Image 1 (tube, helix red, strand yellow):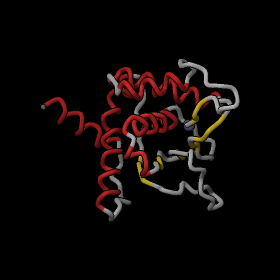
Image 2 (cartoon, protein in one colour):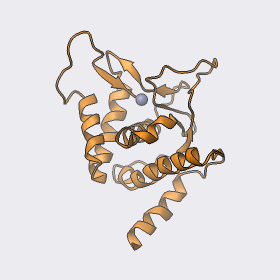
Image 3 (tube, helix red, strand yellow):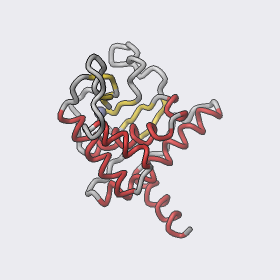
Length: 174
Ligand SMILES: [Zn+2]
């Protein structure tokens, strides 16, 4: 009990209090769960040598700089300053919620900030920075002890699963 209290207190230093708390109770609860995921990962990031400062928000459209909504396969993205946008639908899929939060936190930890937000989409190839973010996210989740399903997803993204049939997108990219 004391240990978990300490973790929460330390995490509060690194996660900005959200000023965009949704007024809808279900959305607010969803965001709170996402923030709890991020807080719980901070000690593992610290153990890997990173202290990402993130500001989580829910965003159903994930519109780009031109105002166009991202494709449905995009689950989240990150941007300079530590802003992480997450699809509200992730709250219905806890293993993927952990994957996307860990992945976007990894982009911020690794300072993958070229001025363009990165996001999850279906791709044939995973660019180097995406693999780097997946690798750190995987290391963090292993250090944090799970969830097992999330670790399996990341291992698959990094090529550690059975290859799909030709003609199908090889992997999800985040
Ligand atoms: Zn990414």
